[in-house]
Length: 231
Image (cartoon, rainbow, N blue to C red; front, side, top):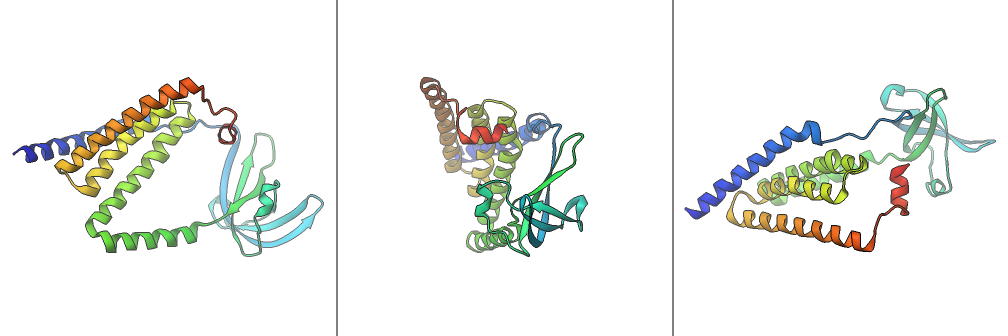
């Protein structure tokens, strides 16, 4: 009787969390603020590589978006770090177009397009997961997808908007943990105990983080990551 009660309570908790996530998604899952400078990423294929007065350039055929089929000339290396990328003809690349008000769009190659090899890797991972884990493997994949959704749509945007990163990370963990635990391990006493332990650890970690961040006066203002995000 006790076990059935615990399982019922855990199911109710799970449903409440899903309901809370759905209700608050329109308000809490924030988006990054818009900017006057518009940026658009395109996929493309390098057709030719040449040199002009400004350095090496590449002729790229855009293969996605509203510019699909258009051929553009773009700088091959925009800084010293980009020179480590050995671009060649027929390489699949990502092109960034930056459009500022009153100025012509500026386009340049940012990186290789790794969509195809990554999709192959994901497919192999899914097949192995289903073969080994069967039903549990399927539920684990679903919980992982939900975790990525919370990270991308809730945690990262809210941190970029200036919300307290510790609080947002803990809140994201509270969203993720029940879904991941109950989908992967089922509604049972052991899972509920593990979930309670995880919640306790999250709260304790948050308290310790706040205390020692304040004691050590950590801000991250001078870090490379902070400069990159602010730019």
